[in-house]
Image (tube, rainbow, N blue to C red):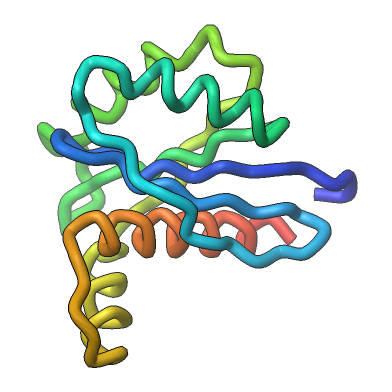
Amino acid sequence: MSNKQTLIALDVGEKRIGIAQADTSIGIAVPYDTIEVDGYEVAAIVRLVLSAGADKIVVGYPRNQSGEPTAQTQFVEDFVEKLRDCDAEIVYQDESLTSVLAEQQLAARKKPYSKGDIDMIAASIILTDYLEEHR
């Protein structure tokens, strides 16, 4: 990634979508927000992409322990199809164990946290993994 890019990561779930952002010139993924899955989530993501000037959307790609697709994989692929008209490039990044890691990080802080917090942190882990693989 030689040119500066703005990236948005999505941890797509059936109830919420965790969001993280990064600027490749800095290379640090930052948890940003969550969006409720309520029928308006695609429009909300498109607005976010436009307002952030995002060049790329990094979407967490779920697989089972053996690396094979799951029912959730199909859900994510179907969701991504709805984003195809967005001006940003869409790429997948393996999301194996990101929610587990996110919950461990939050629990270590010894402060209350929500499922939305887990989703945001998971999105930032997905984005961090992507940044590390593409340096």
